[in-house]
Amino acid sequence: MDSIRLKARAKINLGLDVLGKRDDGYHEVRMIMQTVGIYDRIIIKKIPEDEIRINSNLFFLPVNENNLIYKAARMMKDEYNIKEGVEIDLNKFIPVAAGMAGGSTDAASTLFGMNKIFDLGISQSKLMEMGLKIGADVPYCIMRGTALAEGIGEKLTRLTPMPHCWLIVAKPPINVSTKLVYESLDMGGISKHPDIDGIMDAIKRGDVEGVAQKMGNVLEDVTIPLYPVIDSIKKQMLKNGAIGAMMSGSGPTVFGIFPDEQTALGCQAVLKAQGEARQVYITETFN
Ligand code: ATP
Image (cartoon, rainbow, N blue to C red; front, side, top):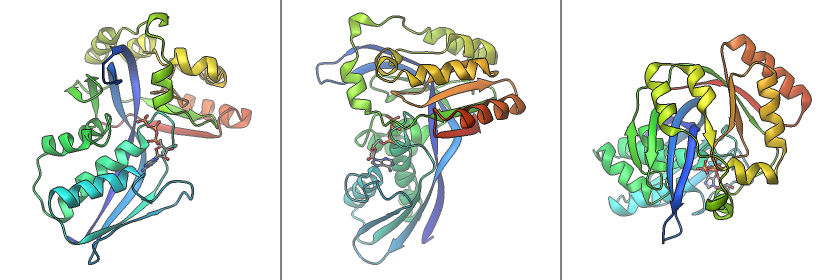
């Protein structure tokens, strides 16, 4: 096999709690992760030259060692002593700096894809271990589906898959730095910790409404005061048929859960017309 085409899928958080800060600066989290239908298209080709070349459809993304794809390819080449190179085409559809693990999922797909094309036979758990050195969300992006993420996000427990539901994902035209949001979180001032166990129980019962009612994200305490547009989009979603709406990750992307496709499409049209979010997608849970 000389090349492989992959779909690197985005995630949302159905729940995100921060339990504390570790001495090394990382935060202890408890998050419920869910893969969604939005994906970046990645094509990895072997090339004879000992190089890592990245071509991206978005001019503003780095194509050097600052791209997580590059970091993943470099790690594979170094650890497995691969002399050939790779040319990787990235067609980005996942909103960037949005709280949807866009970069992490690209890195995850690069590890997965290079394992295949170079026929390395690396186990999934080893790939996840390698992924963690690139970023806390990378192991989850390799595993996918519905999962509880603890530790700094790397301790993963697979959950009963979230029942299928329609989602609207809306990103206002702001880029949020995940690092800055975590650094600005005042542990003492968290207004309400989400009921992560309650969300997991609702998922187990197949109770989408229960999930929608219990969803919560402590990072909203940091990001919403900085960008009130996030709250405004949440309210618009709830006004237009969402049974629950929340910010994903460190934001600024907001997602809403909808009872059916028709209602979701109606809300999408309203949000597009209103213009607070420039990128408004309809998608589904992916398990
Ligand atoms: P997370 O949800 O894990 O916090 P995010 O969705 O907030 O991630 P990303 O889209 O992964 O954020 O990217 C954040 C920054 O990382 C971007 O500003 C970009 O410069 C850099 N970056 C590096 N590699 C990539 C990549 N492959 N795709 C997107 N951004 C990348």
